[in-house]
Image (cartoon, rainbow over all chains, first blue to last red; front, side, top):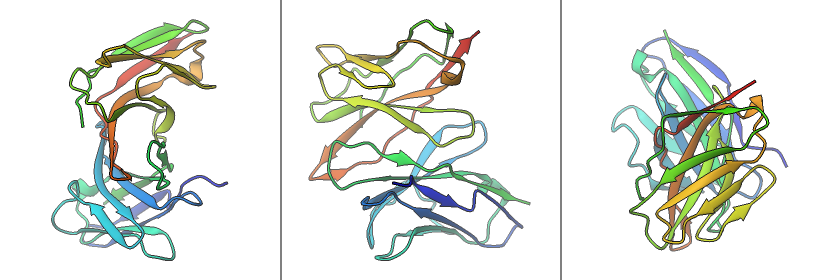
Length: 114
Length: 113
């Protein structure tokens, strides 16, 4: 059973470009969470999705950021018109629907905005 | 979710037990205690979780006080590869949905040779 897969592992974008980060949850997992870790800082929750639904996006910046988890395919975190402050590690986690279970994290995508 | 308090850093000698404390004095009845760790630049790794009973798995033991206001993660025989930031998190479940994990600052554990 493959773990949570994130790609790309490293992404370089120029200011103003779009960044698309992909997350394939573990098989059988229908809950996906995105976190951001700025340099030398802790992990901050961004958004929680279930298939085709955003459950909690209280940690998402109001502009330029969006997330989806379609019926088929990976979850996508999209950042439009990137700025240098978006440079960070973005981690995805997944868990099954059953309560009282652990969430498993991917190895992250390191976004660098130049 | 309840707030947790952990010491910012700890050292442990290789081969000895590492005992990492966590205070969660405002924990409520439906909140579980989770422990994760993050080895430098990697994704967080699940270690263990519990509600009120002590738990043990192949990685660690979790001791939760009777009043549930604090807990201790025990790594029985620490190795250099256990050097990481350890996060104690309380997490609530409601209506069959799993809430997100809220990470604090954690404890930087350094295992010394």
